[in-house]
Image (cartoon, rainbow, N blue to C red; front, side):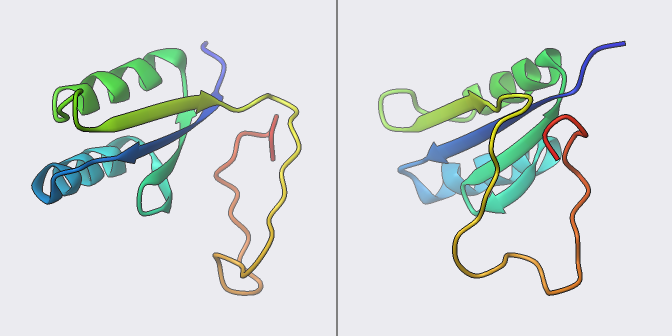
Length: 98
């Protein structure tokens, strides 16, 4: 059994058509936090597959894709307006970082 890890993946895509393709592909692998920022919860292989798929859609000289591993026991906080309505709790985070 592989441990669940969490990754934040963000991108800056220069072409609107590629941007839409990348966004659609990312939605297959991860949960959008903002339009171009996603949370991927899964294995190292899940991350590699996602980045491989995205890599086939971008132009490396024009676009930027970044992936950051979240620490298992890192601080989590939010400043500003809530992203979910009051009373709704998102339990999609792995127990180690929830």
